[in-house]
Structures are given as structure tokens and as C-alpha cells.
Length: 275
Image (cartoon, rainbow, N blue to C red):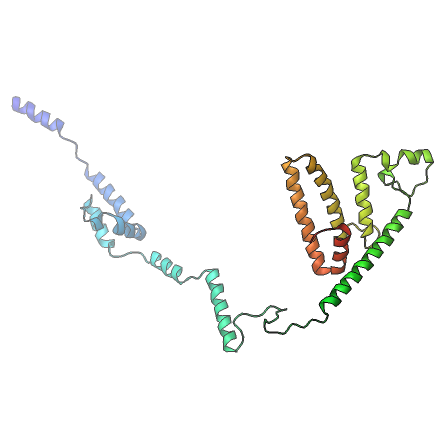
């Protein structure tokens, strides 16, 4: 009875073994998994087969042994196409190099010259001497000053400035004294000065967009902000806006210097700008 009891205890303590149907299911799932060539190549490269460890199931070992030396051709094709590909920058550099070689073969310089290129060895011919150029500059300044005086005189002959741009209207003396610019605010005075300064450089009636007129408007605004900064030294935002207006005026003057040098000289001389 004791032997029977011990045999029963040992049989109850022993672990249960998997059934044959479970073994077949696991084997089938592993075979279907390892039948994929991509997974097989990854396992053959990084899996247990290369490390020399025994596989965890015999079915997996058989499948791995079949596909271990059959890597897929897709990664190889991708690497080959990647190596053969050329970036846009390299392609552009190669085209430039071929073009330069063609120019050198024809006896031309490697790089083309700019359209207005002047060689360093070309002689410099001055059509005028230094004294003649200085005399011409003084004559031009005198003519510009006379022209500006005429414009100022013509502007002063007109009716006096009235608030809200009511110039040219017929009104009684009492109403005219009411709309006199002396009774206006500081902002109205600055606006009137700006408008009168822009009229001196207008190319036509109502011109507000030409370069000279814009420079005059920016200069008026700069003078106004300079007066403000003299009183409020720590106003950093106004200082930043003032620097931006300086840049805008400098760009406009550079443009005028390239395109219309005579008007540029008139504006610089009239406003007293240092360039």
C-alpha cells in the first residue's frame, strides 16, 4: 500500500507533457514563419544559427538550415541602386566640371566672364582731369541750389498752410485764424513740414512714391524720432525702429546712386546727408 501511495504521489507531482496536436501546431507555425525569405535572412544574420547555439525546436533548426545560405535578393538590389545613385549637388558639380573642361579644350577661360568685365591690364583713360571734374561738380551744385531756391520761392508764394489740408478754400478771416497751423498740435506741424518737403522733389503732381520723395519722408521721420530719443534715452523699441528707418533710407539712396545720380546728388545736398 505504501508503494502504491508513493507511486501515486510521484505521478501527481510530475509535470504534464504537451500533446501531439500541440507539437504539430507549434511546428506548423514555425515553418510558416521561417518560410518567409526576409525573416530567414534576418535570423541567419543575427539569430541563434550564427552564434552557434542550439535551436529551441528541431523543426526550427531544419527550416533555418534550409534557408541559412539563401539570403533574399531585395536588400542587395537596394544597396546596389543606392551606391549607383548620385545626388543633385554631385550631379551639378560634375556638369560644371565637364563644361569647364570643354571651355579649356576650346582655349577659353575655365569660368565665363561677367557681362561688364574689365581686365586688370586694360589701360584706364580719364576723359577729364581732376580739376575739370571738380569744376563740373561745383557748377552742378550751384544749378541744383538755384533750382531749389526757385521751388521754395514758388511754394512760399502760395497760400499759407492751414490745418487739415484746407489750403485753397475761401473762408473768412475769423475761420482762417481758427484753422491756422499755429493752433495745431505738434503732430500736425510735423505732417505739414513733411508734405512741403515732399512737394520740392515731386516729379509730378501728387507724387508720393518716387525715391527722392520717400527719402524726404523718411528723413522727416528720423528727425522726429531723434528728438524723442534725446529726451527718452532708454526707449529701446523706438531705438530699434529708428535703426530700421536708417537702413530703409540707406537702401533708397544706394538705389538712387545707381539709377539716377543727378537726383541723388540733389537730395543729398539739400538734406545735408553725409554719404
